[in-house]
Length: 449
Image 1 (spheres, rainbow, N blue to C red):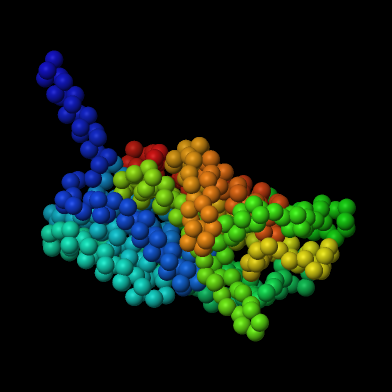
Image 2 (cartoon, rainbow, N blue to C red):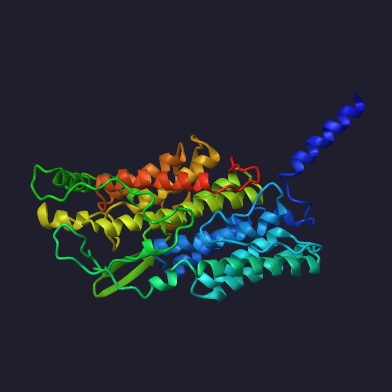
């Protein structure tokens, strides 16, 4: 009986260790435990500084986090590479046998390698990377292990960069700008800057998981009409009345989820701009906070970030495909022409077509990924906007948050109701597609954290 107990205990310990990394150098685990959240925070800061548009930012978040995941996964025998699962990603380099590695450092180096390539000023990443390595060396790591780990991380990062360079992003920079239509039902530039439409060719970017940009299509928007008894006019009147009867709570919700990366302000003869987090960056912050609250191990965090960022990136590709298919008029343009020429929305209208709502699509996509990972009723506090002076908000679930993000665009006066509701349906489809197609575990399962 005693012998049987020993055998059983050994079996349990072996099974448990299959999900755990190999022992790491003493003192490093605590420092690197939540490093992915720290690197994403730094990336968000750089994205704000570089003023990347929300779709472009989502691409950067996805490639950096995939690189971090791929460089970390060899240290976790129960998990597997996403090579052959993500569109176009093949033959991710494996560590050399016989060499000793500390994979969290390799993961950070892979993230940094991609971040330097995809952002505008590599020095911004290099300073953070230098400080990170100083701390690693101060804690203590064998020089050979550090060298091996950095070399492997860089190799994985360069592989991901080569993959990224084939996604049609660079080619899309040279494509023709969006040509304005004379049709009264189609999008026109809006005040105060009357900027041209951004990223009209984003649907040509290779998706990460979707088969094509049009795989997850939203329902059609309401047909344009100017008659007061028409459905479209009533949808516009709803947004008008929300603005006219707005209260402090609705305005707070609109501003909390605004996440406009570049808002202009004019005082007298001077115009200045204020940079903020992108909508995707907001959900990255939520993901970081949940990972810390749940005290996930590094690999579990990497799984969460990969699933969320792939959902965000494909959500933008899907959303932008529909935006430039319908080229839908904004409430600001319609209301000022057909209802009240003096009306202004609470938020500054972004420079691209109205339908569907980007916030609704990507928030629902991220919320779906997080719900699949952490459950339907994960209550959390969102402190993302404390940095711009807005109070925290509490949510009963991720869908509770994404629903508020969607309706915030109606409160802000920049979307009609169908853009919100149909966009949320589209985003959920994208999020579920990503979650069920990407298998992070070798047993063919996806993470349940």
